Length: 327
Ligand SMILES: NC(=O)c1ccc[n+]([C@@H]2O[C@H](COP(=O)([O-])OP(=O)(O)OC[C@H]3O[C@@H](n4cnc5c(N)ncnc54)[C@H](OP(=O)(O)O)[C@@H]3O)[C@@H](O)[C@H]2O)c1
Image 1 (cartoon, rainbow, N blue to C red):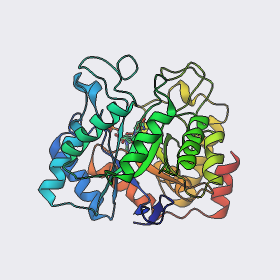
Image 2 (image 1 turned 180 degrees about the vertical axis):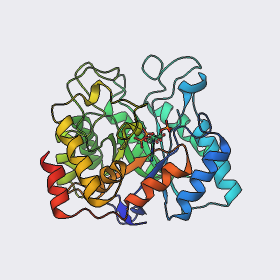
Image 3 (image 1 turned 60 degrees about the vertical axis):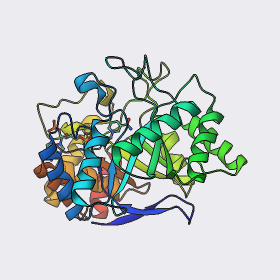
Image 4 (image 1 turned 135 degrees about the vertical axis):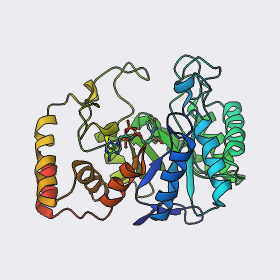
């Protein structure tokens, strides 16, 4: 495993493994035994950065979520895991009632919602403070400043270590950070966005926004991470749910991008020349990019995780990287 630092403030920044493990489906679709085996193997391989959310995975059984955090809490207790594993969680997108969703009935990002969500996540994870807390989706009903102040207060109180943001427009991230800077409080330093080697279309209307895709790491976001040294990019769904290598997982309309076929060809060529799998080439490309990302992979078996873990040691040659970048 390799490690890198996230967070800019010397008092709060943390070293984490360069590969993060997503626990989204642990405790629902992925049963406890398999989830524990994947987590154990991840830690054995040196992994220290696990991702969850208070709303995972409400859509499976029509709940309000929390199953993933509960499973992680049980795993921590049963293995005696403490600070050595850094667990990120998110709030804002849990449905307020079973059978509803994060668009029509979300908990949102008001100060009161944040306080209540943090208490719930701490209890389920079995921790005194949260390592990293993200605002999961924007809340258009709440002033940005209210959310920023509440997040900042949580850090000030020691209830949260680092702050992050996911699926927000780049302008919202920058405005939130500007408010935090002006008020001398902690702001967002970890950005979690959908990001992979294949480019994602940004022009499609989504449930989250009629104006296009705010969930993907586009040029606005990547240029911000390049320019701001305290920012780290965590890339969710880097394997596009398995679509690179599996016929049962076709690429969706979001990847119907003009560069798609050229990039798939380049990937196959580099996989052949490097002796790695296409998934591993994707992860290695992200890890070593000039705006490096922390791939946040999912896995439903230990074998899938093994393939992703091995990508950490895959060094692409300059020619291979150029071939991929130019496609
Ligand atoms: N911030 C957000 O809004 C957001 C949104 C989505 C996800 N996330 C986070 O990102 C994490 C990862 O998301 P993701 O699951 O979409 O990531 P992903 O890594 O793109 O997809 C993981 C899935 O790909 C398949 N897979 C993985 N390795 C494979 C292999 N070696 N061979 C064949 N198939 C393989 C598996 O599908 P099967 O299970 O079907 O076998 C696995 O569940 C989540 O757990 C969550 O923590 C965040």
